[in-house]
Image 1: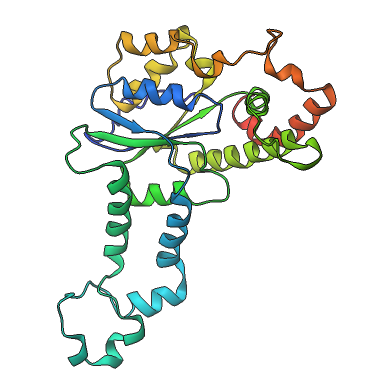
Image 2 (image 1 turned 90 degrees about the vertical axis):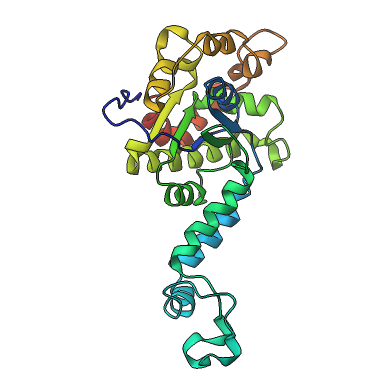
Length: 284
């Protein structure tokens, strides 16, 4: 599953990095590892607020009514200080009167996103965020790819049974009726990782998968490969972060057994059926 480093086509000098994956897959550990590199600031989760922004963006760029009402009459931006009351109203379409054209839509939406994650005065060249809420039926990643053509996307995966067991142990899905939260969690995992895989297949040169199991094994070379692809230098700091064994590792069961032992063989078979497609695509 791991892709070889693209040493012949290194990234541009400065580019955003978007780190995505399911919750309880090691996203925070990988965020810390990326932030241990020089000139990198990967911010934390933000509740997935880019989902409605993505809908608004694609409404502007794809809906025929919006395209005809605004961009056909507004091929280029207008001077916002014009006296529109003296203009020929039939030409500007007063009810849909706006100053911006198609080109400004991308610039304005990109500027909105950067205002949250790349504030003025930020000195680090590489900015971005990690989020566990994108990749299902939303189009947030697709929007990011269009607005930031030099962005790099880093996805992290973990064995889905371990992910779902860890989520269940923390009470995720506990409000689901009839105690079927584990099933809902499996469906969410499958949808999210299916979406990430589809994006990766369409954007292979901009995307890298990291497996959690490889990330926590210093001998795997996973961090070295990822940093080489990003054009970053490794140091002892990355290994020190792995040695901390915090987060996922610090949530053991009282009996010392893996969390996955909470599931009966019947539930394990059911989970396997739900996650089969993306699980195989990720090498599990």
